[in-house]
Each structure stands twice: as C-alpha cells, then as structure tokens.
Image (tube, rainbow, N blue to C red; front, side, top):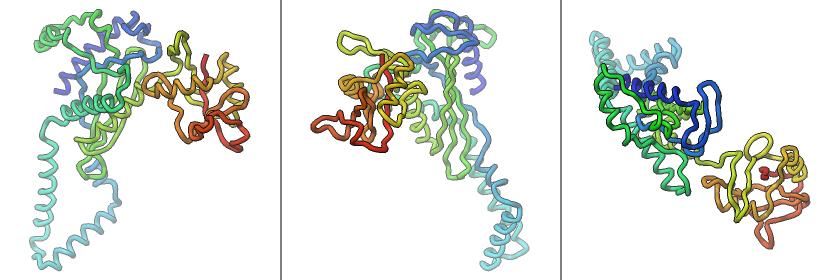
Length: 336
C-alpha cells in the first residue's frame, strides 16, 4: 500500500515538475532549481503516505544499557524467582517463556495494518480542528480536492497503463506531504512521527511530535496551522482606502531593540517606518492569523519619537514615554 501511494506521489510530483515554470493559481512563478516565496494559499495532495521507521523501543531496550547493567537486571530476576521457589532446572525455560510472551504481544500489536491510515486521517482532523478553533477569515492551508482527478485515479488501478496528468488541473496543487513513524524509546505505546511537506516553489517544511497514536497528530496539526496561517513578512493589507505593507524587522519578522530610537533607525535603513498607534491597534485586532500582528501583553512596542505602545497600560493611554521603562527591551516591526 505504501509503495503504491509513493508511486502516485512521485508520478504527481513529476507532473508538477514539468509545469513548475508556469505561474500557479496563486500568482507565484517557481522553477525546479530556484526557490520562491510560499504561496498565499497552500494546497496539498490529500494522500499522505507514512513509512514505518526503526523501532526505537526495542533499539533502546537492547542498546540503552551496558552489558553489565543488563546482566545485573537478569541476575536480580533470577534471584527473585529462586526466592519464590522456582526449580532452578526450569529457570531458563521459564525466562524464555516470559520473554517470548512479551515479544509475541509486541508482534501482534505491530503487525496489524492501518497505522499509516490512522496517522493520515488524524492529521487532517487535527488541522481542521485548529482552523475551527481559530476561525481565520482566509484558510491558507488546504488538502487539495481531487474531484476533477477521479477518472485519472481510476486509470492508475491498471499498473500497465500510464496516467496522463493534466497540467491545468495540477496548477492548483502546491505540493505533497509524506512522513515516517516509529515506536518511541519510552516503550509505553507512543510514537515518534515526522511529517515532511515539499512545495513546488522549493520550500520544504518538517514537523515532528511524540505521543500516543490517537493524539500525536494534534501537535503536528497545530504546528502546521501556526506555520502556514501566521502573518507572512512581507505582506500587504488594506486599512481604509490605503494599502499598508508589513516588512517585519531587518533581521526577520518581529524584531527586538534596546530603545524605540534604535528600532526607528532600523526601519529607516530599509526605507520603512514604525507603525502609528492606530496601525498597531488595527493590526492587533486583525491578529496573527488574519494578516495582522497581535500586540501581545507583556511586551512593549516601539514607536516614533521615543514613544512606546504598552498594551498592559491602557489608561489613560497605552502610548507612553520611554522614560517609564528603564532597562527594557522593545518589540517592533516595520511598515511602509
């Protein structure tokens, strides 16, 4: 099943590679060798194959202790059995029977199919749950709806027949996702899951979490939401009748400065400026998931003229003089 799914993914990826020089539906021109910015809306192929990796539980059980430690544990077990009155002539057979029983239980638990299906379904449910809880205006991460491809997928059932992927249909697809899972070294039934997302623009994303099979994908789903839904820099938003470009800081997204004056100079260096009070308020109301930036409480935000936006001090005004915050660091981002 995994090999068949990987064949589908590779065939799909090859088709995408033949048309990546075109402009996608999101208006991003990409190439096979160059990287571009992540599309505004990412559409992922819904089939997510998972391959089973090394059993870390058994590996750590075998190599996580020194040989002397293992012999000491075995000696302690033998002594306990002797104290319980076990015949020494049956000792080896009893120990082997106990070990075989544990191995048989693990074999039965790991041999049943469907773990990859569980993880793929749980991932989709976790991503949807994150969107339902946050409810952003625009969803920026989707699993591609394959309805137009139904006939093509039927053709793939015949391994001798080569499917002809329609580049026009594939234009809406941004990339594919695939992953691995392994039993965790804790030996308590949890998994270590790694998910990879490769986009046609050249960007790759990797997410990892550990937990029980029915819960582990909740963490990865939240990581995916945070990564793709949060405000991207640079980006543009509308404020009334004008457009405002969010540039972030010279070193990345949200910057840190020792003074508002230092932050102001950093923005001027990239032909930008610090936000006004109204812009800080509006972008904070939009929030991190709708193209804005939340003015998080507990932070001080730099403004022009050595002033500070202090969300924790709204009365009589959150705009304060820098002299009220000696020795503090200030957050900022630049706009234009």
